[in-house]
Image: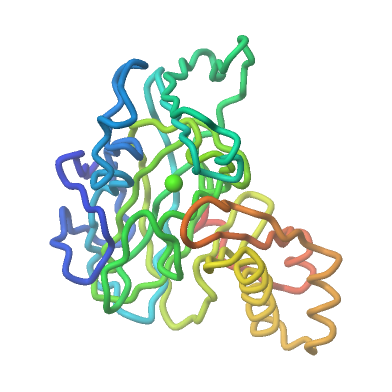
Length: 305
Ligand code: CA
């Protein structure tokens, strides 16, 4: 099993990042990841003013995939997400949708036990491990790992979890995949500023799809196909996610525009990933049971998880 350690961190995804590891498609890789604060918060008495904000949102990598060429699609099968028993959360005045209601910064250690995280007053929240930052290199400029866009990035999309296959664009030779910012749990919207942030390990299996145009980023779970899109405003991210699913269905089926729009309006769900970051992220969820009626197969079962 290949492994990329936490010593290989990037804070921006771009074409010039030096690969931490090169693999062939079909191989498995373990990424060791820091939390979104680069593990700066060890204790509840860590002060907000002590945090070095230049170190937030590190991603581990990048991974160079042999024979992945611009125009291909990188399929990242997420086989396992592992972490310890302590996550962190932080809020501060002005951050998130309730930032105007917050008067003082707070940093909290959230203990994890038996599949639950314990918040104030002993409220137990079920753990749902997910990857917040995951993307390939954009073709030209570097993009901060704190930003989501067409290359992936800080999508904070909770369906990017164990058992999901994520489809990302290959913009540069080797794709240069990087990932980090795990959460033990996070809600749609990420309305504060973070979920239960935690360091950990992610095991992925990489494959390359050639000669097929997909409106990436996309994802596939056991029962659903997703398009994921980001834009400066939530309206635009929502429109783009739905229109990307429109493009996918139209190109796969040859249905009329009106028929695809009818389908989008009743058969799937437009959902919010996160509203906190500079770019907002939405996803459109199409049940596989609907896709299969149209003969749509995103990736064959023997390739996908
Ligand atoms: Ca994030």
